[in-house]
Image 1 (cartoon, rainbow, N blue to C red):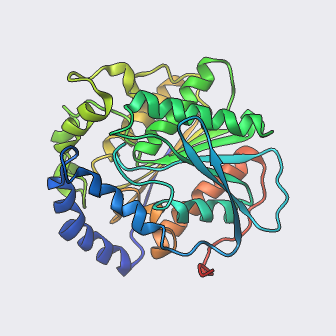
Image 2 (image 1 turned 120 degrees about the vertical axis):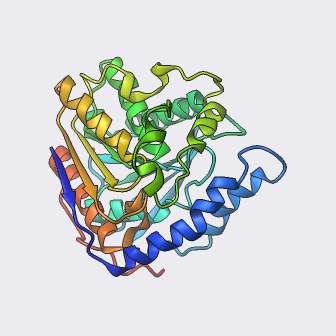
Length: 320
């Protein structure tokens, strides 16, 4: 099922204009390699200054090469269900801090623990290692006592890729999971058809033609291997899936392709496409009403899959 949502807010117009005026030129020209490339990590460093939500508690986690934050709503006893969240950033930037707010929202609204995974990225690892880190983080949750079939894997952009990649590894080993959530997921490394999509000109900030070069850098392969893209794998055993994307973003191509292939494989999938929004807009949390509404859809999906209780409909008390 595919459902299209209309734009609700003036704020989304402002955010879209800012993305086109600032973010798109920056992402179009900022180098992935070279002496100034490490400055891209300044975004996550700056995000660390933002206050944490006073309604959550946090446990720092250190894995084998990866780090994480187990975010839990205060005053709620943990059961056997949880989420594992993989942040986006094209496998080259962003981290735990840039995505802390959406993780807190998910913990508060589902009433469940959420493990946010800081996997290794470009400069330290290729995509294969990023996936291995995320598999290890998911195993950490299982070893912690959370049942595999009570885990929902979620992620945005590159993190959406990782959520599907980990789910494919799990189901390939006969381990059932509770569900998968992809927020504007990047699921196809081959950019040949996508760069000719009408959204290549409409996207608010992703320069679609750069995806070729970025894919080669993060995979370490000069020629794309179809098997590295989740859309080209055997999807038949994947758990029920929720996909959310913006109507004008270039990665709508990926979401719609995955929707079609999941349906063909007999996997339950629901896809929501939002008019007038930017790539991965749910990550913006309380900034936009559309973001909050999209998070509500994720919460409803988690509630349906895990039988957990919904807590807060919206989160306004963001100060510490």
